[in-house]
Length: 316
Ligand code: FAD
Image (cartoon, rainbow, N blue to C red; front, side, top):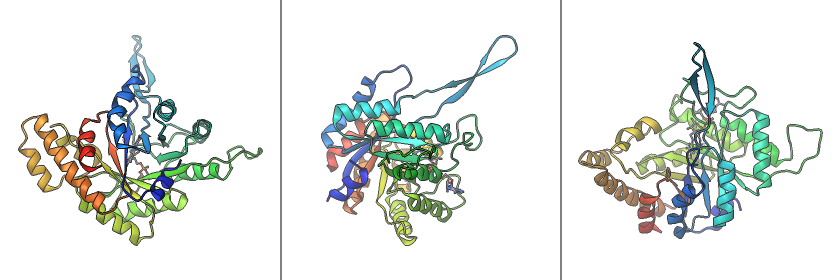
């Protein structure tokens, strides 16, 4: 079933979360260990992130370097099939532009259609470590909006090879939004104009970047409504659990901590204390979001569901 239909059918805030494929060489059990503790909260759908290849240069010993492609976290499509089968929930694979040309994207979409996957979160992807700025694959998409258009075309039965009549897909498409703006964007308004283009192209809901200040989310929703974005906007939540998160979150996700939170975090001496503050903050934050009527909560588990479980226990 489609995410958008779960939202339409529900009269209360839904619980959902995203998982990260395990590192290459690990097994599917590592995925189940992350999901099992959260099943009791009744997720209707689970997102599975997609991770691009990175490149490493191997010294060949003769003065030459060989470029080797490494997929650190493979398996998004297979993991989706496994969790749909095991938990009887819908999987939402993340599909990205980076690393794919349009033919490869179409093949991935066809595989997902065969598997009975009804949902896709369409994203551009970040630049890989060896790139200063995002570079599209040759013959691939530069922006998420172009990927959304390709998925929409498939939903209309338009495949790249238009000589044959093909059966249309029926994917519900989600996209990303940034309450504190995307880091490359000149300003929030410009970023939101491009967000609107993704909705106009066929995205039916937005999942936000993680944030810790609800005021920023509410402000973002108001601004979206003002420019005619009327789709559900699912807030992204990530509990802070380690001392490292104090610098990692702002640096990696380009977000600010509210003063009240940073003051509390600065008093913490170890991960245990940080985790207590993070969970308490997460509870207050999500309670307020639920009271405001958000359609669903999207928890970023990043492979560790313990803190999410403690928050979910208090709010669901
Ligand atoms: P876009 O919507 O294409 O926007 C990228 C930038 O380009 C923005 O600054 C935007 O304002 C600008 N822009 C958009 N359209 C145009 C245009 N037509 N002309 C000029 N500028 C334009 N990354 C992964 O690699 N794998 C994942 O699984 C993954 N999951 C994510 C899940 C969520 C909920 C979120 C919020 C992010 C996720 N990301 C993931 C990260 C995401 O790929 C990055 O944030 C990426 O840098 C931007 O992706 P996007 O889809 O928002 O891009």
